[in-house]
Length: 285
Image (tube, rainbow, N blue to C red):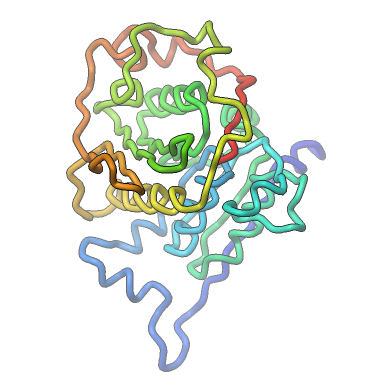
């Protein structure tokens, strides 16, 4: 029990009541066509990854007033994280998920519950420390972890949002996986299953270039994607790819489900893919 208590921390953002002669905290976003604060306030989001992507997405969700937000990450804060992730000098060498939850608890004013679990996605689920949630966001940095998240969402019949940035920091994507529609495997089909060849399948090694710019862009699209899952905000894509330099035009489209998909099309079913801890090499996003 003592050990588990060290693996999770829970906080709550302040709920700022309407002040005299002032508008409510959520007044301006409530004026956006299709925005529903009541629905966002009931939403529970699990974010796998508390690094560059997770911290940007988390800050936005706290400011907008999501109901409950949980991070899971086993990584620790390093000095090279401080230029783009929501950590401070006092957070160095401490667990990212726990410290991010505490830092973000000061970023919101609509009563968001924020929790951090000091385990990776698979271990966090196995520990039963993760509360129930409505959607999972994959803010991780390798495809093996993304596949585990995709399989979990398929098995639970729940939506998942995937995002990643390129190694050169110029482009990134956001993909929305919804029940009975295209999954992560449909969006990124592979010619064969290569889970057995982990050395060639995991993400590149640490010290990969990373910068704040692209993280801001992709996190904004993730926030919008999450809104569309619970509100009537318009959306005409489930996959978007965008570039900072603009050398290649931004791409937004509806990815269709593949009958031959190795994740949802029969080659590998959620019930056949046991979730086991991975020894993947993370990228410093």
